[in-house]
Length: 142
Image 1 (cartoon, one colour):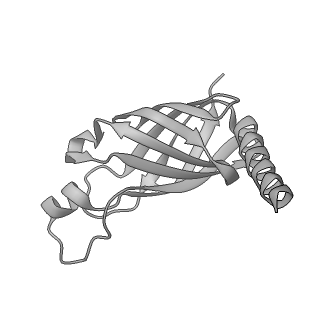
Image 2 (cartoon, rainbow, N blue to C red; image 1 turned 90 degrees about the horizontal axis):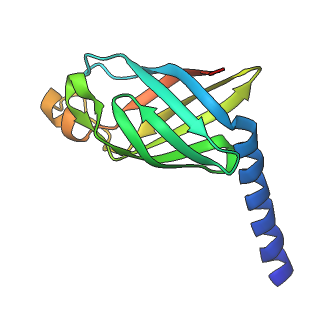
Image 3 (tube, rainbow, N blue to C red; image 1 turned 180 degrees about the vertical axis):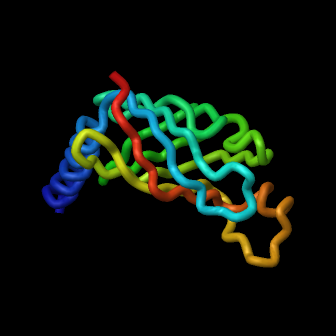
């Protein structure tokens, strides 16, 4: 039983390390905001990823205060400040799913928040609706 647990832990750590080293570096780009209630439709992304999997930088107008690459190149991050200043949107957490593709990273992501109903007011969505991003493309900064 201990061998199985140790092997599973080793595989998880190895996968996270492989994901980190694959995407280590400085990346910039943007994704498309999938919402009809924001005036801003593109989300700027500027990530600095260490070989150990630590992520810093900015997402939209927010600062990444703690970020980490998990298994499968999933970036989990905590944010500080407004995500979308022009819309007054603040979110505390965001998750990006990245795929290395040639010399770039592509993917999608979403913030913390609730599913918004079609009848929800714009103000309600600004306070609590999940912000989703599609067509994310990041290029390496040289």
